[in-house]
Length: 118
Image (cartoon, rainbow, N blue to C red; front, side):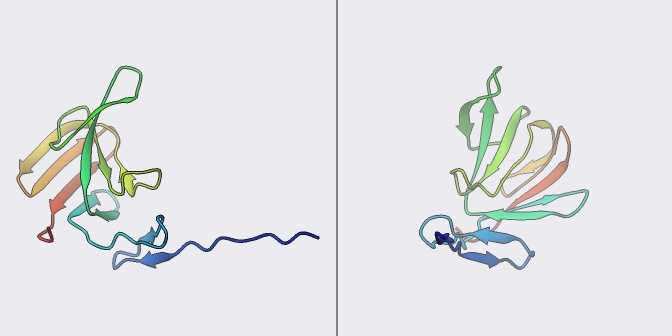
């Protein structure tokens, strides 16, 4: 009988009851500069950094941006296979300031705040 080796994955539980996985050798992203809240259920995600992704006709990322726009999706860090959250593409920007954006996607409404940590 062979033994199965189980890999332990370090995790933390945030104040918003979200599990965060330490994907790179036990390093947990614990500095948050951005907070995203989904309107209909209050789901909250936080990340150190964000990108706004523009899509091409084949559904592949054309290029990342630093500002939101209709047709772009929000990607929250870390920027690898274990990203925290990605929205569907924006259909309407309802309000935008330097530290805040409220936007509608194909299936949800969101509010994104820049936190004062950076």
